Image 1 (cartoon, rainbow, N blue to C red):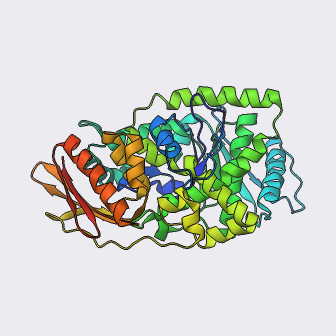
Image 2 (image 1 turned 90 degrees about the vertical axis):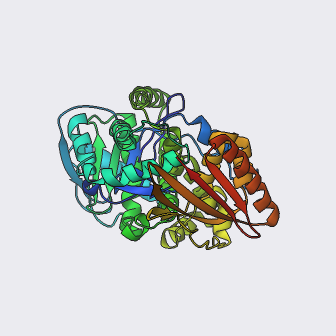
Length: 437
């Protein structure tokens, strides 16, 4: 995905999930189901002071250098056009401006990743209307699952009463996505048609996804369908790599090109920023772009591009690994926490994760306290069920040390007092929280 934020330098990001023609909802942490294109998508990042403060307040030994600002993406309009561009190593001679540009960008991306394109990448440019129609095709079939996640979020007071999660997220996604690469069909689709600096930056970002897909297969249904944080963590790896490549490409732009790109990024971001969406959902959706670059930076420090390649073969599975790359590098697995007992027929279950824990606590007790309490996360599981006219959620957390466990219990007790319909139980090895709403 490509994302640009109002008020920040242009940048882009791109996340991977099942293919665009099957635009499906992928559970992220809190079982929040988000419309994630089954491809690597270019999104317009919104200002997210909550997520940024949570990341900034993490203990210094837990986070690498702050990620660079996300790069830009295209927001242009003209008649649709399609071209298939051969890899830079073939004898095909590009004969259109788009073909020549993609060939040049392909060489740049290949050099950055120290890999070669194995086959042509189909590039399609679409005007706003056709692009959004393509992006959100078949999304309606996921409404029921999204409504279910909406009830879970409401039980935790993470979204306000009356918010229609499906409608708000679909609207946001339609406004915010700038382009995507589909790892199932190998198509690369860009919103717009002019070859501006902003467009070229987005294409470079998406070509990085295409290159990684050709070597490591980004379309992994088993990852996207998992009831844990595998999808969030894998997307963070994918986006971190493309943001690294895109950042390198932006450094090649002239001052005037950078200025033009920033102007276009600002215009597009102002449109996307008008879409209403609950802050918790924005923070979860933007996590791969905010934290992915630091994770990939740690991999590059460890063993350059070959270490990144190895991560695609053995990807991270938790937000803890993304937030603290040393956890991933030393191969520390999360604690397996059995699902807590439900008070009725289970409608949702899975892993909450450290990032969602920080955000959830931060909503009611403040980001500083929430981040401190979540640090030391060891593993968790949760279940949700309907009870009369409301939904209830029960979460069980394991921590790294007894002191971490006690700190988390205290934070949840503060949270429960503010919530008003929640309880906290501290046992020798688990903190269990139950909330209804």
